[in-house]
Amino acid sequence: YHNRLASFVDWPLEWEANQDKPTPETFARAGFFFHPSPPNLPDNVVCPCCKIFLDTWDPNDDPMREHKLRSPMCEFV
Image 1 (cartoon, rainbow, N blue to C red):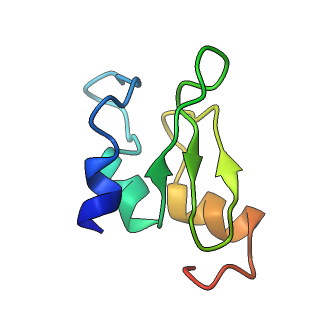
Image 2: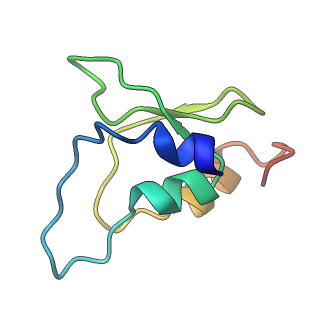
Image 3: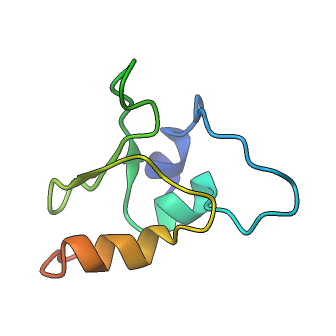
């Protein structure tokens, strides 16, 4: 968890204070490392278990739900 969380040091997304939003902690708990691919995918994340890359996050997205939905066979989820 701590290594995954540390990868989000330059996380580019800033949300409005009142939004229910994914945080670096939420992404790390869902198994993701921050893996930016500028300039087109500045919010790209990757799971080292299933190798899925996900990006274009919205404020109401749930990283664990998206991980399970898009990679249901991943050993992490």
